[in-house]
Image 1: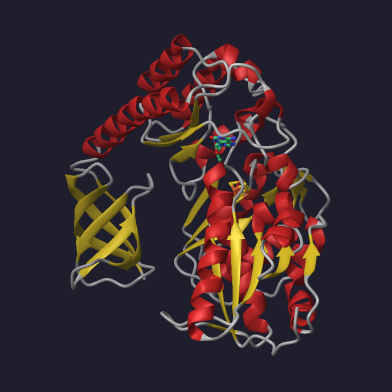
Image 2: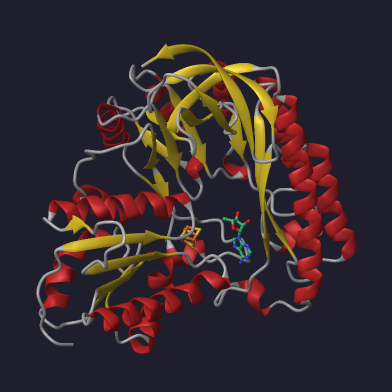
Length: 447
Ligand code: 5AD
Ligand code: SF4
């Protein structure tokens, strides 16, 4: 690589989960602190960070096509952007990326991105750099203070996974489970609220596995953290994702009934409605134990909106196994859910299991599952009609005077009126679509 000027502008492109969105925001803050500014809309940036996702095949392929596109656009403009590959593909395939894509100057894993500034200097001096170390604590301590926030902010409280589901790459890309210290989280939450956040979504691969200690050294569980954040006066709403059935505690279920600021929404992935498939996935819960948990959440908070994740076509999944997944969906009535075709991930136990399922079978099952999920989502939205609820105003709508926000149940709601971004307003839901609702403004609660 030749020597070059330090970049003056950057663009961070994040793919995949909300954790990556959070990391992307933190990388942007880190670069801004170095005096590198966001590239104006429509202009090529001097430095492009591709913050990648490795959870399914297409995501990794997309990285290579994005690199190709950046190189081509650079050639046409007579310049070479500095390209950094960050995120989970960087962690899993760093060496391969360096070998396959000479235009990439830096490869930086999800636990090492605080070192980007040094790596940029190195890359500018002509040395390609890879950093896929995993000192997660060091990363958070090295990141700048939060200065900017929209009304709804993400806050990573936990990272990594020790569960080793047989299909999943996360334990390898994000490492072992770690919890960020309580005091650091309170401080970051306070800064986010000062910067304009009214709602904070706590993030973690197993967010409810979070543990910590309060300032007196007493052990705290995830529900303790929620209760402490609920005491913060400027913060109006708390959400969290993604939780794991095996880390659900009595305290968390109780918090849903007791903490007003904790929104009535639960994303609890189950992956399959068949016990043999769950066993092969190493989920260590059963369909029955999952359903019992949901019942308890519903008992604590009867209006709770339920969401989940599903994988179709896991190796060995029979038509009867899949029918059991459909039956589970019917039984639960999800307000919203995500479903994916199984994708063999290199290095995971399931990738070398017998009975891999044919692509056409997976396609067909995914269609049936998504039809069932969409039906239930629409039904959930229709059941909300006539309700007057609090909506957090997040952005302007497409038409003048129109606003878009989220209901407590995480539905998107459109309405017209004299409000501002960040307001919490009372909206009557008057029209339901499959993916959003239209509402009428009733009263502004707080600015
Ligand atoms: N193939 C398909 N989907 C997967 N997920 C995780 N690993 C895979 C895989 N190998 C899905 C799971 C998980 C969500 C984040 O992605 O449903 O909950
Ligand atoms: Fe994708 Fe998982 Fe990495 Fe998130 S943690 S970016 S879902 S591989």
